[in-house]
Image 1 (tube, rainbow, N blue to C red):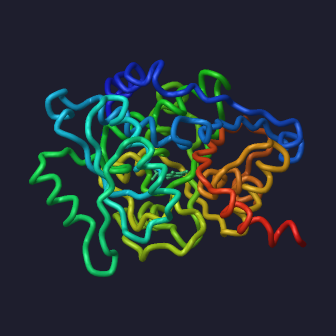
Image 2: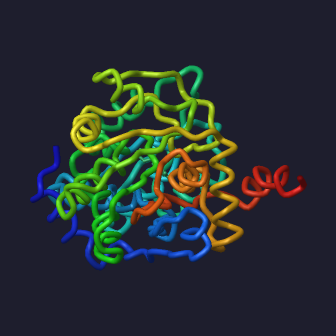
Image 3: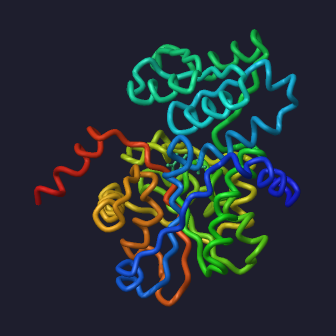
Length: 321
Ligand SMILES: *Cc1c(COP(=O)(O)O)cnc(C)c1O
């Protein structure tokens, strides 16, 4: 588990590197919910999601000679872009292993940060095997998307900034995939505010963390069918599970339709573009899945990477109604 020293080191490494993203307030939202809502706008972070924090911190923590050999990762989403950008800042090579049918927008974004893309056939090859051969032949270091103490420590800086701006909070609501963001958030929150309730939000079809915490063991599910592509994980990690067991009070779930209510709300009333996973935490409050009345609540908008075409495709059926 990351220690207070690891969290402090991450805060120091990211100072002046990560964007200090704004905390948005809304009179309408507060009145509607009878609560004080503080939205941490992490979709405005470098590369469009909080993942930059964890990736940069984990790469910065490596010995410089190890780092110089290169970095590899096998996520195709926001973590890939974050690793590519962080490696670019350190001027070290990065390789991202991606399925050959990954959306071209994701490929292009990752390539724009100078990473090398190695593709594989999802139906015939295993990404772990490809990554493994890169690791052993080229001596690259693997930076995983969530299950790593330095990744978790990097993610903690987001909630730390939120608390610095908002002051004490009664509850913190965080979208959950493999649990890196909520683990870091909970550790940072409980350092300053041990009684803050930490609530995670998963898509209904992807409730691997909810099941794992209920059963007290890591539960593995099939790849979830959800529009929230930042949360399509099949199980929490060893590190994140240990932190969540100790620090997370509750996991609630939302349907894809409720997630789209969140995306729609942010666009309509806050003039913010969030991707489905980015709006997941707010969606849980709007759908009354969490009792927030009378409390001071922090909500992390975790990412905003969505193409105009995809945004339109998801929203048009609702706008037509
Ligand atoms: C990765 C991601 C998540 C989930 O984060 P974990 O650390 O895997 O729990 C949520 N939202 C967005 C936008 C993401 O990219």
